[in-house]
Length: 113
Image: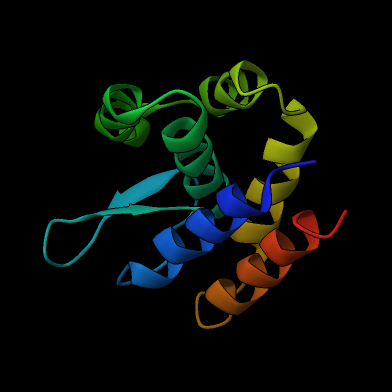
């Protein structure tokens, strides 16, 4: 189970972005980093479990990170790589206009397990 504080932080990351990109990340209109659902969950986990320096390194590397690389981050956080794949699938299969609602709903499911 993922701590509710991590789930809430991931939701905050997602809702503060100008859009939710396809996995793993993209640059917003203002040049800001926008993360997919899996990457936002990973970032929230890194912030809470490892710390700020590691979170900064993750932000710097996420745009070029492979699927396997993101799954490796989940493993480092002691989460199943299948969770990463499921979050990516939810994110990438959702239409852009519904993506935020659908991925936030999926995140909330994680917090009640």
